[in-house]
Length: 210
Length: 374
Image (tube, rainbow over all chains, first blue to last red):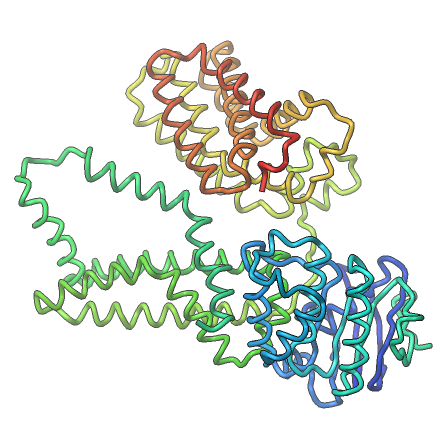
């Protein structure tokens, strides 16, 4: 599913990540690591946001650097602490993501209703609590038909009921569309029902599989 | 309208006008002043006024030199919009665009950005439209047609520039030389904004200093007051503080966006109020030295005190206006006019104290009511 090719990420002169060669198969991955180990950096690099040395291929064909648009259409991302312009409404943002990621009206209705954001979508984001912004960012990450969804700390700031909904989304998306997930989280996913295939961990700039 | 266009237009086009409202207000006031107050070099009848204005527009329609000058102004305006959107795209609140609109087709992105630039270019288009109507009436088509093509080129070019901006991968920032030089030094809270200036506000700082010096040079050469007139250094300092009002706003913006936890620190209200003085003294060192070199010692010292009082008043304004630059600049503009007339009409010895007391009262009443700061 994902192939790293001489991937190196540095901040100024400090090397944060060094993944020389690695292939990840389809599945659900739990990414672990201490604070500052580079989990968010890895996810942002995989999402096509941060610059890095080397290349990343999706399904051995779609290069993050050579086929930027195709890659970004197939890889969705939700930030740990999402920040959006306060003057936009939830609906405007969801519509925009749906247009960009070829999401459907059914998807928009399903995700907003099941996570309980429907009553607030016409309000400006300035009125949203941090939990609501987090839910919104999760909805955006499920728009379209991605092959890989990257969720950075998906369990923080979300209430328990909504967490159950999120677990069901992940399980269903993985089952019905074979969508892979990389979930960066400090909290354990045990008991969530999510069939985690492999645990990834970052230690001393290296990514290892368990 | 398509969702991507709605979001981009709201995020950039309308905000471009809002963020530059100060400059637009300045031009508006200048034009109004010109229309109503300027004395003409000769007398012409009221009905001739329309004729002369029409003639000015006709010159654009028929003179390639004037057309070229107008085109250059349009280029400046367009480059300014590139600069604005380029900087906005780097802000956290617009990071989501790098993993959303970049997934859509190149054509979708291009036309969405074209629409944004079309909205930003409305003043240019209005001017062109007016010229075209006159061109149709007086049978001069070549230059309006060229202007139309030129606007289309500017819009298309802008769309390409913005598409490139939004598709660029984010590189890790390297700290500037000045910031690296100061790294490791103990930093105290009141001066943190200076490091922010070194890190992110170098351009705004240099531009402010440039304007400050231009104003000093212009006033020195054009002022009709005698150099020993006590009001002169106070008017200088008022102009200097007004020029620095944008930096003062930036300092507030920095405090509210990055240092909100400041309110939680065990620091007294008066100490918080006065802590801005340190930043003010440091950023106005060049102007202070100039004042000392030009005016007598006691006059200079009183001018510095007056400047600090006005700066503290401007620093308290965002607590009333919220972090809304348009409202803030309107207040600054109104206060500038009020203080200017106050100084000219003999209120030199009162103004510093009035400003200081007003600034403290605003600060005292509003600082712990963050509901007023949005």
